[in-house]
Structures are given as C-alpha cells and as structure tokens.
Length: 505
Image 1 (tube, helix red, strand yellow):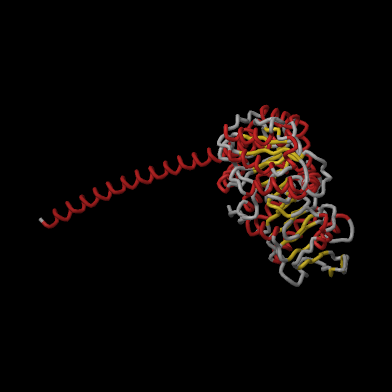
Image 2 (cartoon, rainbow, N blue to C red):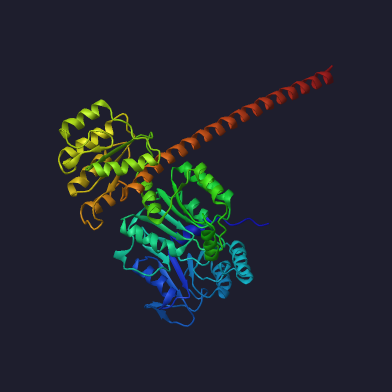
C-alpha cells in the first residue's frame, strides 16, 4: 500500500502561498467572496481566477482552466459543484499544484451513499496525486498576519479584519470560525495568527494543521472547535507534541449530548464519540476544555500571552469589596487556593489603605487603583512568597492600565486582568487588550482562566515526569543490551581463541 504524502508541504502552500488559483471565481456568492477577501487582505502573490465563462472577475484576468494558467500555482481554492471537484483535483495534479482548499459541499455531510462515495474518492485522489485537500464543505483558511484570506466568509474591509496575534484558530466548522468566533475576537481585541476551517476532513484533518502549526514560532496557543475526532491515536500523539512544545490546546468540544452529536453528524459527517472518554483523554493530555465561544478565545489568548505559574496560590486585588467577593467566590468554587498574605505584605497594604478597604487576600484597595500607590500595591502582592499568580479586577484610566501593564512586564509571576467597566471604553481597555496582560470580563471566566493556568502547569509537570521515566527506562534498556552484547562478544572471542589454539597444537 503506497504511503500517504507528507501533509506539511501542502499545508505550507495553503497558509503561505505565493500564488492562488480560484476555481469557480465569479462576481457573486462564494466565488466572489474568496477573491474579495484576497484582494481586500492585500494578497501580495499571483492571483488566478479560473472560470471558462468569464474573461475577468473584479478586473483580474480569468482563465478557462487550471491548465491554462501561465505560471506555477501553490494552492487552489475550489468552489464548483461537487461533481466537478475530482476533475479539478486531477488538473491540479497535472499542473503541479501542492494543495487544494475545497469549499464545495455535497460530500459525506449529505448522509447519502453517493455523497459518502464521492468523499472517499476525493480522499483517494488527494493521496494518490499528492494534492492534499482541506475540506470539502469548508470555508477556507486564513493567514491573518500576512493578509492571506483564502476563505469564503462574508468579506470585510481590511481595517475591520481581526488583528494579527499569536493564537491559531482551527475549527471543523467554518461558519463558527468565521462567524461567532471571529466576532468575539474582534470585540475582545484578541489577535489571531491563522484561521483554519477543516470541514468534512476528507483528507487533512484538524490534527494535521495543529501538528504543522505547533512548529511555528509565532503561534503560542491553539483555539480548537471540535465536532468529532476521526483518529484518536493521532490526536493523542499531536497533543503530546503540543505539550512538549509548551503550546496549550484549548478546545470547545461539541457532542456532549445526543442533540449536539446529531448536529455535528449532519453538519460535517463527524462522529463525536464518547464524551466521557474524550473528556478523560483531554485531562490526561493537558487539553483545556471550555464551554463557549468567549471562553475558548479568551483562554487561548491568555495562554498566548502568559506562561504557567510556578505554583497554585492565587492573589486577588480589586477596588471594591463586592468585586472581591465575586471573584473570590468563583475561585473558591473552582477549588483554587487563595491563601493569607505574608506579614510584610499585610503591613504594606495596611499602611497604604489606612483602615479603609481590606488588607487581605482578596485585597479591596478602594480608590487606590487610581492613585500613585496602585503600582506599590501590585508589586507588594507579587513579591509575596505565598502568591504564585496575581488576578487584578478593576477599571480606570490610561494611568491604571499602564500601571498593570508595566508591573506585569517586570514580574516572573503571571498577572491576569478582569475589566469591570464598559466595553465601549476607547482608552484603557484597548491598551490592556493589546498588551501582554490577559484580559477577562466576567468573574466566572476570570476564575476559569486562572484554573486553566494551574491545571496546565500540572499537565506539563506530569508530561515531564513521564518523559523522564521513559528516558530512564530507555537508558537502562540500552545499558542492559550493551552489557549483553559485550558478554556475547567476549564469549565469541574466547571461543575463537580456543579454536585457533586447537588448530596450532
């Protein structure tokens, strides 16, 4: 049986192409969306619309077929009816195209024998020809940092696109990736590095893209929207690889209920599997499981900005007793340790607060969040030997935001922030969002973010311990066989010596 071609060169061609063919390009519907997104994203490579019925689309010369394109093509976006997709892939192979993003629907998601057979044929052809396929029934891929939007999401102006960042968003649902998740990223000021919609995964699947992107130094964390895992063993291997690289996988996994599992099947033909088994697998592999869109991106953005703490003990600071109570309750509900402060820290807080608020953990610092004493309080909390990470919940001016950002930049301990004012703020909030400080907006998600950091620390620790035990076992095995080999060699040499002596005597 022939080996499956390495997917990495194809994925590189999809995400970092120098030339793209759009097969089925038009000036309306999906054929227009990809061209518009590439043009508005200011794609710097060669763009080749392909449509035998058009001379040009949006002022770009159109070609009757892939064969007729004059230059080399790295990646092809295919938007024609499903019946013509296999022929287009064959043309891509003849042209030397490395990869195809198949937007076209009409495969296994139909639930028909014909659709499933067509998807099997697509997989076979992709692996026989080496033209690796993302899709079908997907909305495409985007390299946000380089403005390459090979995607059929509704076009937006370049200025309104999500900003570049360090999170790779990989989703089996294109409508979710380019719909609510994109909206959350824009509203929360969360930067994305790549957006990948894998659709039916006839050929390449979610784990193929994670395995490729985990090697990208610009990607610090992953946000995964999973409907179903087609190859559990492969996911385990790639999740371990991500752990080894210290790049957290944050997952919104659908199919917890029969209703959700049925929706996933009707959407991309994905089998969700046992939720109990997958939840246990996620815990073992350090995959952070979340419950909704906001949590998925806020926690992935947190991991992209900060590392895991050295311990589990949490310090909390706010400007009001009610807020302290809310975040303290949520931390308590999640089993987080919020210890008493060191005597030196208490003395510093008591001196500054002068009997107001609460010199404790959580610390209610009243109006000092707006004063010159604010950075002193933050530094005192971070210097406390009983604290491993600090959560700050407040709002305020540019001065408040700058104090948090600057203090966090000088600390080895993670600093997380919960914004308590209007999301319409145009000064302090954008500063925080664009800084290296993770930002949350609700006590529950704030506490969940802290717990995720703590749990990921434990997962990394387990992984290192297991790797150490395996390395020790491997070394002992090697030493054992070296000893055996030396003994066998000695015996053979002795036997050979006796034979020579016998021949000479």
